[in-house]
Length: 307
Image (cartoon, rainbow, N blue to C red):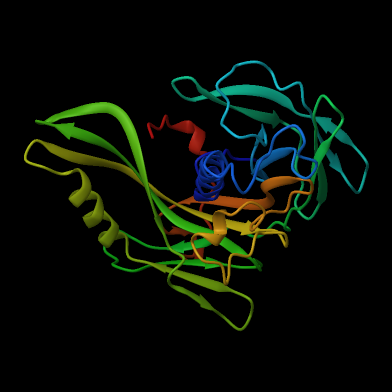
C-alpha cells in the first residue's frame, strides 16, 4: 500500500530551495538576467518522485526576474517518461496561491512510480524550449524496525538496505490547549535524527533519538501561563535517496543558492530527485514470540495538519 508523504522534510527542503532561489533571482538582475533572450535556463523545477506516494507533485515555474503575480496558465507541456518501457505520462497543472498576489504552478500525476526505475522529466514552453531531468528512484527497502517504549529514554530505528539515507526524523502531532480548552486544530513539529547514526558492518544503519528531549523543546515553544499542548501521536519517517541526490558537501551557505550550484536540471534550475519513504509509529511492535518486528506503515493523510 502506498502512503502519502506530502509533509516529509525532504519536500520542505526542496520548497525552501525554490523560495530562496526565486528571491535570489529577483534580486540579482545585474548578474543574472533570465528574460526572453535567455537561452540557458527555461524553467525552475523542484520536487521528488516518491515511489511510496500516491501522487507526485513537481513545482514548475518559468525562470524570470520575479515570482508570478498572474494566474495566467503557463501553457507548458510537462511529461514524465519511464525509461525501461517508454511509457509517457502527462502531468496536470494546478495553481497554488503562495500569499496575496503571488502564485506558483505545481504539476501532478498519479502515475505509479516504481522503485529502482529511471525516469525522464521534460517541461516544454510555448516556444518549444525545454528543461529536462534524469531521475533515478532508489530500490525499495524493508520497513525499519523501531525499538522504543513509554519507559525508554533512547529510541533506536534499524534501517536495512539503504545506501543514501537522506531524511530521518520524528514527527509529533499535537493540539494546543488554551486556558484548559483543547483547540480542534492538529499541529505537527519535526525533529531531525540525522546527527546520530551508526553504520553497522552488515549494511544496517541504526538511528538514535531521544524523544523526551524533543518533548521538552515542544514545551518550551508552546507552553505558557495560558497555553499548553496535548500530544496525540508520534511517528518516524525514513527516506532513501537516489544516486542523483544533490551533493552539498564543500558548499557554503551562500553557494548553495547560487543559480545552478545545486541542480540536476538541464537547461533549467532546481532539483528533481527520486526517493522511497517509509513512515512508522514511534513505538515497538512484536510478534507472537515477543520479537521486535516492523510496525505497519502509517498514512499521514488520515489526519488533518495545520502548518
